[in-house]
Length: 483
Ligand code: 4AD
Ligand code: MG
Image 1 (spheres, rainbow, N blue to C red):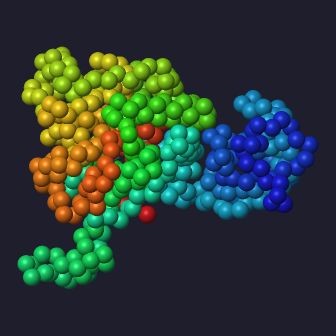
Image 2: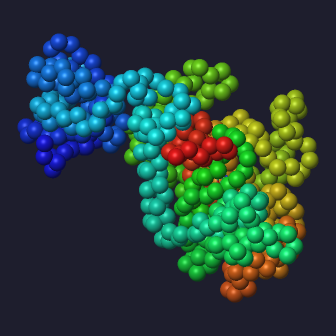
Image 3: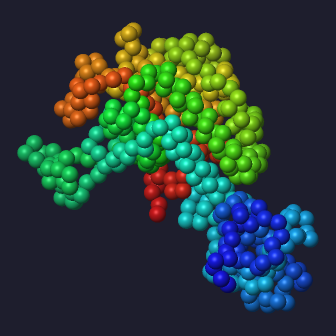
């Protein structure tokens, strides 16, 4: 079995019959057969599609065929020929089969049937072998690639912000501490507090909650940059939209105001949806069918009105609705669910934070399309957002997607040193530790803006999955950090 002739299934499926023998390597999905022929469905992860291998029992013998069970890895040498059966146009007529690794049917956890997503999360080490996770992992790759392509085409530079940091960019105190101190014997200072001078970095350190502040330093030199990396948040929210470790894309642009920022966000989201439709149609078609099956068990109100592909095409067709927080507040206050006390968090005072029930009402019921809400009350947003002339709102923007809610959060940044330091005082952010950040406002400050896209929320939207744990290979959530 010569390695050089190995061909991946995706490439093979694009070919008509071949006169030469080829080698295909992969994993057995199913095997069925009769006295005359054994049929093996085989997949190598290059595509959602399996190929059918046909083996003559007389040629291979019972012993070998028995070892070819679901999950086993095999190498098949054979001829790619027109199929006599229905269901496939081509099949691999086996001349030689080698079992590379057996998978004992008594103990192999994946059966050739539908498993619940919850069960699959418990066997995350074998989850990539399933159709669903395989499709999701291929989509994740395509979207990550498209993100780099989009920004590269626009002349943005990929900038690497640190994962280990001493800053809490969002100021929300949801950081994971990083330390090499002996937790059994923590050194204390004169005042009885943890003595971080003895720690690895000689300072209190955490995992990043956002690369934005470091990204701002780069944007104020290179004009347009983006970060794309892991982000960590110790928020104890066990929802279908939150992970403790997720990936965020954070573009930051000098000389952009809030409108430029919204335009870029909308353009990027449409680009990513279009790229995925153009490059992942097989996987999306599978995921659409999967969702339709899954929804049969759900109450009517929880089902999506449109199939997955139509929802994706809908993003391309419509301009996003853009409304201020104040307009959103008025719509919500006068809405039926609010008047009938159907919201868990009633809307009656201006300044209240919008919950996901409100966001989803606006997107799915009221506008029936994606919505960008801008100019939020300053008290519910971060210190770095630019104060508007009304002194009450800041130039923030959240992009809300159907079925997801907030997918992007961003803002125009406060570039005026005096206003920024005042806002930091209000929010009790220690200015001394942020001196490096304030220097950008001291020396050559300019109008600038940026936003953060939650990569997994984007993948949720693109795949029609309903739990964010199912769109990342190794989900980290409260009480859960396996492998
Ligand atoms: O709205 P957020 O907190 O904004 C920021 O972090 C800004 N520094 C971004 C910027 O302006 N550069 O987070 C941005 C996005 C959210 O809209 C959401 O999609 C995602 O990140 N996100 C999460 N995704 C999964 N799990 C979590 N715990 C998330 N928290 C935020
Ligand atoms: Mg946000």
